[in-house]
Amino acid sequence: MRVDRGNGTVVALLDDGSVDTAPNMIAPDLNMPHTVRSVMREDWKLLSIMTGAAAAWAALMVGAAVVIASSTGNTAALDMMYAYPGY
Image (cartoon, rainbow, N blue to C red; front, side, top):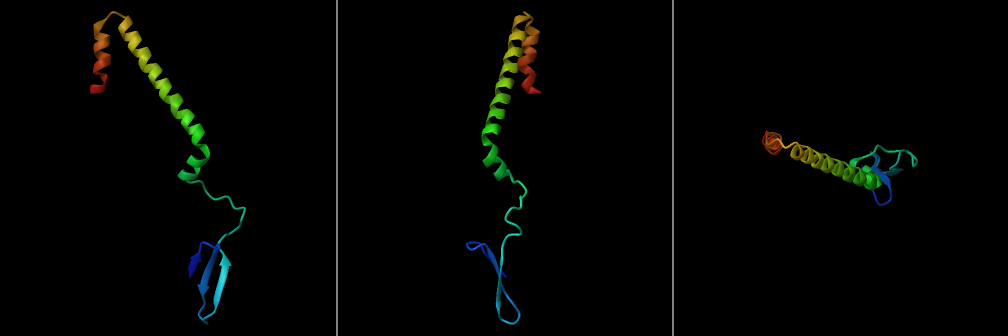
């Protein structure tokens, strides 16, 4: 047996020496399961927007933490914030 992808068929050599062909599709309207590549191809705009929104939200939260820590006047809070990535 071999698959002829160009013609979309499966070609089989039978025991009596004859050749048989069959279409290489179960059903033309069959919905195949999604792959990572097909999801990225269809939804790349939405995923890009969601990634950008998450990055903007994270930057906003880090900025808010810096403002709050620096506005308290307590240097211990500022030192804790800067030392946090060390943990």
